[in-house]
Length: 130
Image: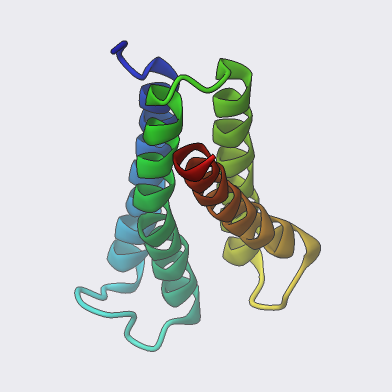
């Protein structure tokens, strides 16, 4: 069994994104002098949700991506999943950081995230039962 290089690279990129988003939360906390929660500050609340949303979605995606890569599926498929998820998360983070209104980038981010996770799961189930 080979080391899952693509999943590891994807995880590393997402870790950097997660850290960046966490810094944005921290800086906003300092700016508004809010230690816990969002203090009713809409800007901080959005930053917390952007950070939290990645935290909620990335682990499951990465587990499935690693399983796919270890299963021996074509590396191009694994790379495509990683790229879609990363772009979806950046799109979602950017859109949610700038407006609370539903906008196309936010929709694309949420849709791309869920599409990647659901199709990864389906592909794995197909490999198991085919």
